[in-house]
Length: 147
Image (cartoon, rainbow, N blue to C red; front, side):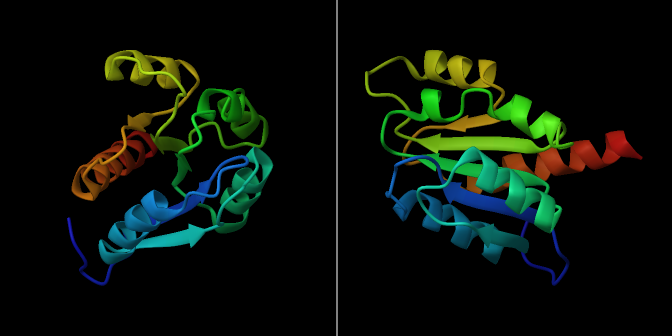
């Protein structure tokens, strides 16, 4: 991991739905940028369609969704299906933040969001290093499979 002047991949980042909490995604964006990823930040209050349009425009490897409102399960419902309909069936989908309004065991939260099509699910306060390691692993695996 780290910058070696070689593009590691391209990602689209944003905060989905009505949410305006950008601190978490800004931290992840900085870490991704520092690690050599091209980051296309589309901001806050982003719709599913805006994420998809940004991926099509940039040919991104992954989407990073942040949500702090607690409504993420509603906001990402059918997102994987919409990605597939747009020809992005293999896009990596990551989500993190305060995803639900009620307290649940993290294992249950992660299971719920993976069931909604997310590849990786992160709790608040996750180490950016862990996110980068996961992304690099996932991109590397996808590239090996597609060869």
